[in-house]
Length: 135
Image (cartoon, rainbow, N blue to C red; front, side):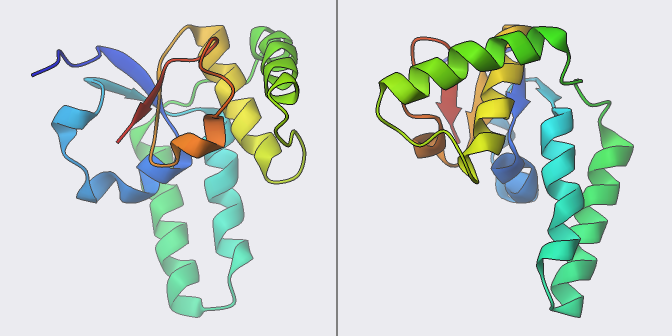
């Protein structure tokens, strides 16, 4: 059995499914980026279903209460240039919904932490920069 990673950034897909994942597939210490909190904060506003809105609001509040988010700082901003260039060179989209994934990858690169996701295809083209783990 592979050794668990000590510390890693979990993306929004992992936070959403956290209660359904095997902890042994995750790093020992979970790090949540401010970028993920931003996505979670938008979630309740992205649905017209009152029950789903309440679930999303609850998830946001639990995440905020549990984690001290990793800031998107000047090092992350500089890393974003490298991430953007790598994705563009791979012929992949760099704009739209994809932008949030790239910002999250830049956070992982700047912090020198692996990134854990349920959607590895969102980070294709970044293999040389970010250690992406699929859970």
